[in-house]
Length: 264
Ligand SMILES: *[C@@H]1O[C@H](CO)[C@@H](O)[C@H](O)[C@H]1NC(C)=O
Ligand SMILES: *[C@@H]1O[C@H](CO)[C@@H](O)[C@H](O)[C@H]1NC(C)=O
Ligand SMILES: *[C@@H]1O[C@H](CO)[C@@H](O)[C@H](O)[C@H]1NC(C)=O
Ligand SMILES: [Zn+2]
Image 1 (cartoon, rainbow, N blue to C red):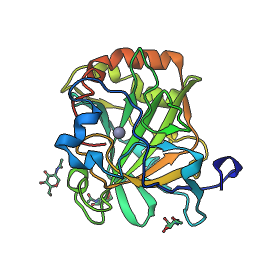
Image 2: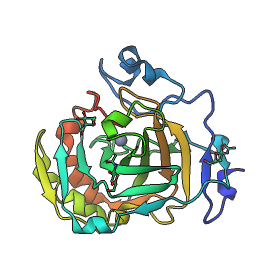
Image 3: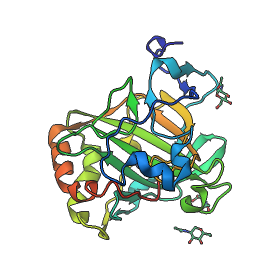
Image 4: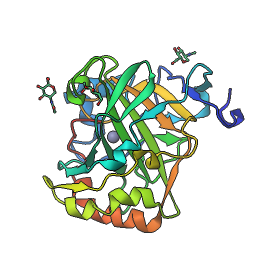
């Protein structure tokens, strides 16, 4: 069924083709993406993420269920830790946050964002019909029925689940600003700051029951093919000014993007 004929409340399944189109994200230099598979064989694998979501590979699957987001509003009572590890800025998530609907229980680990840069402010990893979005949020979970934490789970079967939110330019987003307004405190590698909790559910787009599902990999080396991806169909909006501020603040670690971070 072509994607456009799928209406509200539909849950979508992505069928992954044998021949994946190569990832369009340009990365220059000797440590760029094309050379990743030399040191990390999984990076040349068939399950490599991200991918382009387009009609030819999408198929409606009625047996996929809406995900349950547990412990999301309770997270409002806790402080979150925001860290810059030199590769990206991550927000550690409380373990009592988890998702239901994937068979096993998946406890939350962290969330992080993928950005472009000032010259090319279209930094989403997944594309839809060949189109990049301004940015992409990843919430990383691990199979907590089988494994003790995300780093142990990252190279194991059914190890990780990532929820991906596509972010486009539009109106000001007060929920995302609860993270962005603290980025200035973690401008440099090794910095860490506690930020006031909020309901992580606010970061999800409208109608989260509409999503694309496929089995793929970490998007950066070592590219383990262990990720159950859920890419929400509807994007969220942030303002031009929010994009500008964030790109200014993150340019230090965007500059080091060609160095592979350990997870997704
Ligand atoms: C539809 O989704 C279910 C649940 O994830 C899965 O078991 C099944 O293989 C999917 N069907 C197809 C045709 O891929
Ligand atoms: C997952 O979260 C639950 C609830 O907080 C906790 O009891 C459990 O120990 C967690 N699992 C792991 C592997 O930490
Ligand atoms: C993950 O769990 C393993 C085994 O329990 C432990 O050795 C390791 O330190 C943990 N890693 C993190 C990042 O907590
Ligand atoms: Zn990611």
